[in-house]
Length: 334
Picture 1 (tube, rainbow, N blue to C red):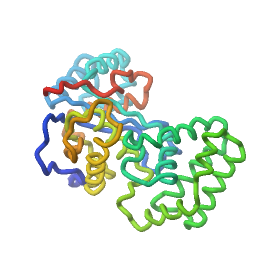
Picture 2: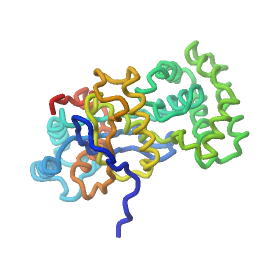
Picture 3: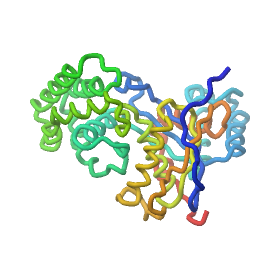
C-alpha cells in the first residue's frame, strides 16, 4: 500500500488572468550530501504537456524506439539501442514545451554562504530575486581553481556548519569553518574573493545558526536546492505575465509551510525587483506561484516525461541547448 502524499500548496484563490500548468521532477538530488556524489549538477525539469500529449510521447518512444513498457528512466533510456536518435527526437518534440534548470552543486553552496552568512537569510536566496548578491557569489566561485584542496575543505566546513543534525557542537563547527576561511585567505585568491571571505563575521554566523537551531521557519533550509529551483522554474514559465500551477513528483522538501512562504516571497519581491525578464504584469500582491499539487510519478505521464528530461539533462547536460534553458515562449493572450 502506498503512503499518502505529503506537502503541496492548495489553490486557495482563483487564478488571476492568464495561467499555465506545468509538471515537474528533478534528478541528481542526494539530500544534504551535496559534495560527495557522482552527480555534480542537479536538474529540475518541467513541461506544459497535457496528459494525452505526454502519453502520446511516451507511446512513440516505446513503439518507435523499442523502449521498455515500464516507466521510462533516463539511465536505461540512454543505454538503449538507438538512444542518440531517440534523444534527438525527444528534445525536438519538447522544444517550446519544456524548461530545464541546472544547478551546479558547488555554486549553489557558494550562493548559500553569501546569501545566508553575508546577507539576510530568505526564501529569495539563490534565485534571481536576490540578484544583488549574485556578483559577490560569482567573485568567490571564480577563485575556486586557485584554492586547491582548501576549496573543498571550506565548502565541507560550511555544509557541516548548517547541517540540520550537526555532528559536533556549534562552537567547534564555527571554529572549523573560520579555520577553512583563513586557509583560503592565506592563499590570496584575489580582491573579489578575499572581500567575501573577510566579510564573514563570527557573530553573524552564530546568530544565523541560532535561528536555525531554534527552528525559525522564516529561514529556508540552507542545504535544500529544490526550493530555489522551483522558484526559478516558476519565474521562467511566468515571465511576470501569468500565474503557474505546478504538478510535482512527491518531494519531502516541498512542505506546505515552505511553499506558502515561497509563494508569499515571490508575490512581494517579483514586481518590486528587477528579476523578471519581461515587464511585470501580475497585479501587486499576486504570486506567480498559484499552487502546487503532489503526485506519484507512476500515476502521471506528464511527470514521467519531466523525470526523463531531468535525468537526460543531468547525465548529458551538453545536449540541453538554449531552447530548453531559456524561459518558454508564451502567448500573452492565452
